[in-house]
Image (cartoon, rainbow, N blue to C red; front, top):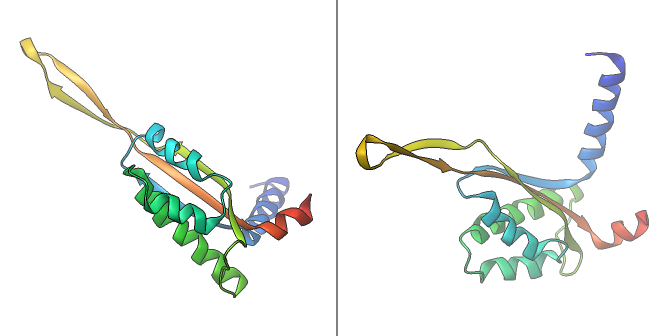
Length: 136
């Protein structure tokens, strides 16, 4: 690894240490279904988002709820204080494609239909509302 590449990597690591985030990898549902739920809570205050996810009928909401609780816990660990109501919000949430499982299903006349079992990765960043106003 060259010097410039190493310095850039170190800058990225330093910036990441200040942010609180959580990742969930290889979730066995399609990214399209997961994005519907992610769009519902993007930019929303954390405890309001937990309520939305808890009472949502979507199956993907349970996975994002679990991930959000993890991100809140990570923020509390880094800052050494409890999250208060109205203090944290979901800064960014991204849903990316994960590797696909490809299977064959028997079809008539000796053929096989391909089944693509999709999965996804979710990354969720939380931040304080006051911290965001300082940057602007």
